[in-house]
Image 1 (cartoon, one colour):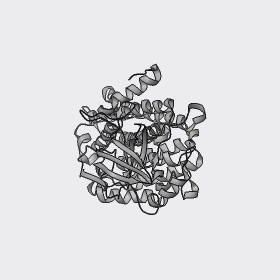
Image 2 (image 1 turned 90 degrees about the horizontal axis):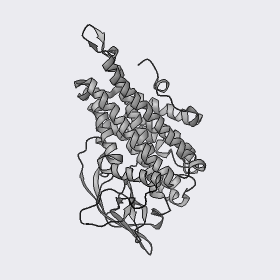
Image 3 (image 1 turned 90 degrees about the vertical axis):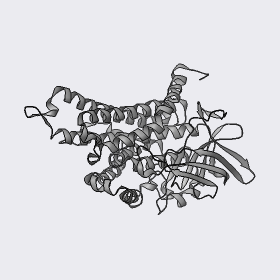
Image 4 (image 1 turned 135 degrees about the vertical axis):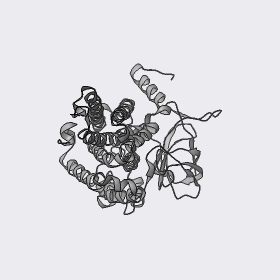
Length: 413
């Protein structure tokens, strides 16, 4: 391609300050040098290089501390105004590897509930930052409400079953939950953030250290994509945690969904942009009968246009959501019904658009798209897995109910 991505997929640059642009540029250099420029080597030795590149991103560049306050050794990106910059970082990571992006997105989402103004919890940050955001790479895992079990009544979060519970004791809390499915990294997580129901069936979140002896992990799951995520079902059997490890303020679960939609949206947009680069390079070398370039054929050009269209609009959606989150005085806090619903609508739309872009490109590329050598099929599998956890078949109906509740004032769904 003869044009820079930012010249093609334009975005409101004023949303990202100069400091953020410097960090974004650094991450783009990491993506191009460490992964994109050596796709085949990365593919052939994926598990080893995945760990190495993730360490260089999080420890050498320091992104493990991106959203920590400066007094805790972080970048100080713990204000809603930083939302566009954080989303941009995830876009650059997603261009390189969606699995690394998902791990980062989940970590920043969980930390947002702890460090993001105006709800910064200094005591909890004091306890967690040295252990989970220090000089060793640590993995966070998120467990959200989902589908229930047949014959079992459970507390609900906006129609979604909460399968974990938390109960207060004199010196802390006890967390229980059986065969819970995390979004990511259940087999290797150092810290779990799980949506629980308290004794009054009110939703809250609990932070559970992964090294607790009463945390039981199942077999590593064979998933469509995000191979290195090493996910597994998890059970909590009377796991004791300190009182400060439970966050029960109003709207905290909505906050998780809001930030997760933004940041996973960033990962998927970045993956879509790299797919655009791939299909663009591929189209430059393909000819059809008569020696004409394939991309000059009107039907083929129409398919290529669909790819660009879906990725372009997805990036605009992403920054619209980032701007909404960044201006709580205009639209409300990230846990408000308005911002939560906007995040659900836009997050779902981004995943659908990027998936359609890749599907359309695969139709045109044929065997080149399905071949591992082109890396395109990995992008497809990774995005499909993200979509399935965030807004796939199992989650599509609840997202629509969220939308109906807000826009049409539905009360009983």
